[in-house]
Image 1 (cartoon, rainbow, N blue to C red):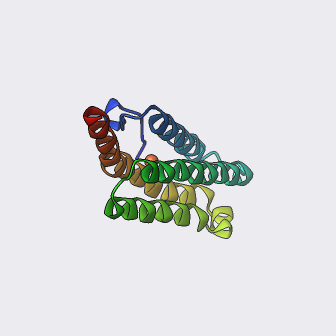
Image 2 (tube, rainbow, N blue to C red; image 1 turned 90 degrees about the vertical axis):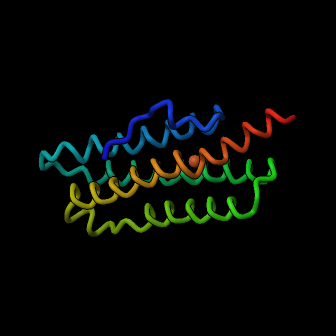
Length: 141
Ligand SMILES: [Fe+2]
């Protein structure tokens, strides 16, 4: 599944949207490499993009979690967000480097499949809900 930015992804917050675009970009960079399938060794390149993706995701989740606290987002939805964030980081951290070395394309594609589905759901359902909460709050005040 290739993930492309679309207007529907907007969470009504410029910073969150910009960070989501960056995550999509990194997933697509990885996808481009996995698509090549030309038999060349791309292990180092793949590991470095996954590292960047993990670091950027951690940064982005930290930003979101700070916003939940600042804006008094309810504890139920905050909990769901935090669990979702953990599952993404765990998945990216759990890449088996041995598997990746043995089967670069297969391992990368499996992971990409999980990450793009996860991100699509995260943006459209989970973060969108927070975006709507922010929008409502702004309308009231
Ligand atoms: Fe997010």
